[in-house]
Length: 344
Picture (tube, rainbow, N blue to C red):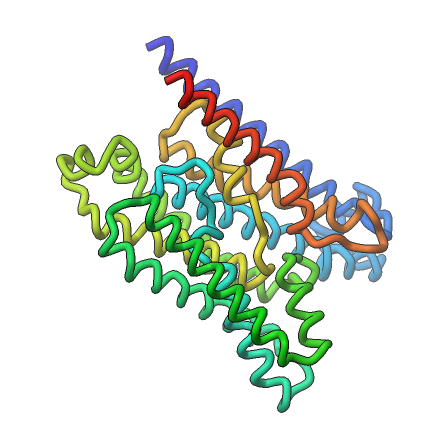
């Protein structure tokens, strides 16, 4: 009873801390930039839509607010995708990129960009999103085709990595025939950025991500049973084949959405689920799923803030910042796991 009470208090403290960090990150993002806006003006513009200062109003409503909310939604989606893949592979360093999702998106976008370069000067944002999403889904379909035939999770992980390499090789081959301007655009997109985020993109991303989040939460009990072994899950009536397919589909949809709107962003999907586990000290999906999403939102907003302000007016790609922060975390996790295996 005492342990249950202690765990509940820890969960409440973690969620309260994440909520406070989220609010702080929102205010910090809105208040930081080339134009300083006071907290009082920010509150008036957001809550009363006071447009007395038209410049500040436009900066908040058209640039900073949609950008930070997009970073929050997509950061949470990428983190949750990583959590699902780590559950699927039973591997703590599995992430959204092991399935070749981002590489597939980049490959298909390269095909569309090069194919249309003779007819249009700039690929519309809507077409970029659709192309990246289709490429992501195609990569997912290849993995799904193998998942029904291969029971070894390590082998399926290797197949995902190989698909990623194949897609990258095809992309590199296509770039040889692209215009210089197209190469620059593809390179910029492949590094990951929220600089082009707007309300329209945010609405579409939210419509995709939030229902998927709800669907994943309803899978909490099967996920909890699956974590204890396939045999145990089957004894509780879980359809393992269907469950595995759902895990891949949901994780791929989340990751594909991020890749489509912001480009491939690395290490968030690997690092954030572990940060959530360390804070919560539990594996319970009912707690981990919302905590991972919220932690990913905060993590991504902070990384985006660093990306756009550290060397202002020059803006870094958010993928650069997440890699710089996430890579050491992954290295530490690998070393920690090796020590635990050696002790066992």
